[in-house]
Amino acid sequence: MRLPTAVSANRQRTSHRPMNLVKSKQRVADHGEVFTPAWMVEAMLDLVKDETERMTVYQNGGTGYAARDEVETGTELIDKWKIYVGRAAPGTGNRDTYPHRILSTPFIGEPGSICSETYLCIGPFDTQAEAESALSYLSCRLTRLLILLHKPSQDTTRKVYTFVPTQDWTKRWTDEDLYAKYGISQSEIEFIEKVVRPMDLTSDLFGDVAIDENDDA
Image (tube, rainbow, N blue to C red; front, top):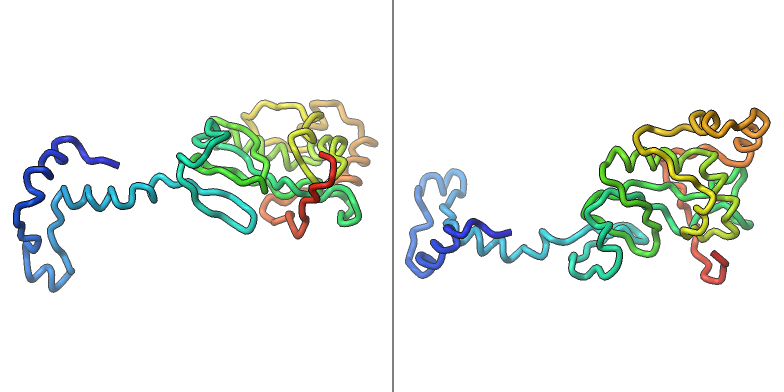
């Protein structure tokens, strides 16, 4: 962050002049107030420049931070809305529960954020409303059943979304919307809701599932 050119020029003229930074001894005593000249403000901002340009990194165990110039791939996603979903998730194997959860709980990634390989990034979306629409779609049972059909292991790479159609991201999606859109019969609905459990987007379904690198994606 830089101040206007006129202020920078003023700093060059005054930075070596003696200056009384105390304008009122009483206000210093009462409030700790001193006068901070523009050139000093600019110098302080320069010291924290890297801090103000750092990005949030969603990673295993929580969040971290990284400078923008450290990111080498996926840079086109940085300033967009997106959805993060855990790469490792329940859905197959002896560690799964029934009805299936299939995905760990997805969440919205704000502009200025990135993720490690712990997560798969879905998007980008131009607005938060579009990302929220897609998030509601991922929570639907029918969507997750289509993911399960192409999910041979707990590793949810982009391949598992092969059968999942793209929707119009202007509304909040529900299973009832999808059942009606695709003409799902009552018997098919009963099967879907027997196999796939509802998803609560406020809870953490990631659990203690770990990625087995020997699994086929």
